[in-house]
Image (cartoon, rainbow, N blue to C red):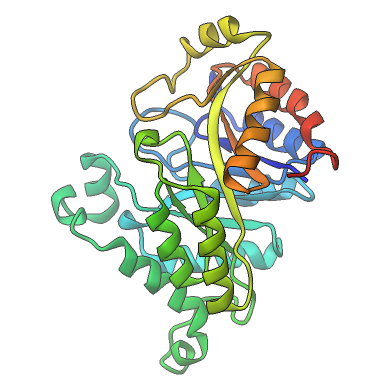
Length: 300
């Protein structure tokens, strides 16, 4: 069955948390699988770091998973991130997603976050930091013997996702035994993920870890009455920039056809949608319309 999640990088025209809460609550009520917040430091908005908002949204919702997509681990302490997300998952078991990104923050934000220059931080090996974070969960007994605690002890870690746009990120996620989210909207010209490759890597994952990974695909766009209207709305978007490519600009039928095509093309049933429209009212209408796609008959 098709599953849809929501990805939000901002809350347009909002100086309070009300719009964001409404968005998450509506997605929860409509049966969406995820509500993910991005971490960005390059523009003004309601949030920079989504971590403080995640427990608030968890408290207002009942079923939906809430998380970050993704934490820019390069500019954070792996220990702090591991502890914070474990605590959240202890309070809301099984509903916390920790997405890990390999990106960068702007120079001034990097300096403010790390007391290091961006050029120096850029040399940090993100793979080492991810492995370090996982070790806080997986080597707990040894850490506790040395007096290092990731509280609350013995509670399950969050659902961990590696974010990427290339098949090589899945190869790394497979070695680590964590889930994978692929982005169609970042660097689409270099996108090399295929159904056959995913099936091969999934089998390798199963052989190495005794379970199958969760995989989803993130895409962006604007839903409107037709393509012309969608393009007009996108033209006013704060996210109309070279770094995010809109994958679908059009009406409901276009969205339905494209999602079914994605299902067939990648053999994946879960997708996470970044709405590029500039008004929260439009985004709420959009997730209500797309909720009709969450039907048992839409099975790949």
